[in-house]
Length: 284
Image 1 (cartoon, rainbow, N blue to C red):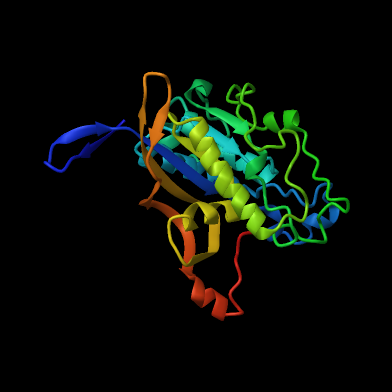
Image 2: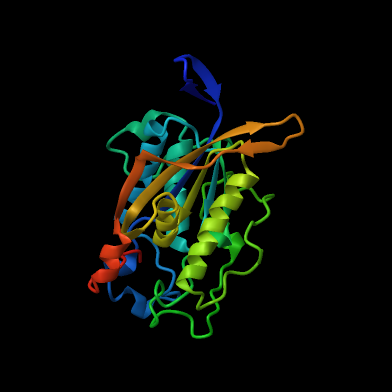
């Protein structure tokens, strides 16, 4: 519950739901070009150590600067997102003040309270399944992206996974189809963000996804703008006023972008991008 000031200058209580959408940390194939040549899953790179550090520090920033608790985390099934979520969640759930220690750079050795939040893998937050996002030379030949959800859940901090949550994405046990269009992927991200917020209206949620998803979360608030760069662990914070009825129904206002909750995103008027053939999005 946040406090707001009404037209007469008096303080009144207004409930807001907060949604944070962030990109994963630094992926190994952008730093070690030969990694993919010998990888069993070259389309699913892990984080480099610097990526884990960046993710943990971002989680620490969330904990100390957001001004509200995160109740629930949803994460793409890709390894880089799961590793990012693991670091962020560890920072958010740390039981003591080691998380604010500037010398503490990763989750190694951090004790957590898993009751502070719950985590769920959500297919709808996955990478764009097309050649614009997944390099053609590493994509599965048959377009079959194989994920073992039980194995992936084991990568998340113990006790934080909510096994009871039903997936929001329509095809509960499958990913979007390979070679989805860019516009189709953007529509998917927009729909999944709204659906998750509506499913948990009384909770503040964090979505760990990919660059295109963060771009969609941002561009929804500005007309005639194209996002051309999303840095590792960049994030967008939006919120909406919300009220609840006695029958557990809720009424929500429109989401608004919180400017101070915008980090690591570069954008320009869409006319500039269209007229500049050298402009290229950097989301991979």
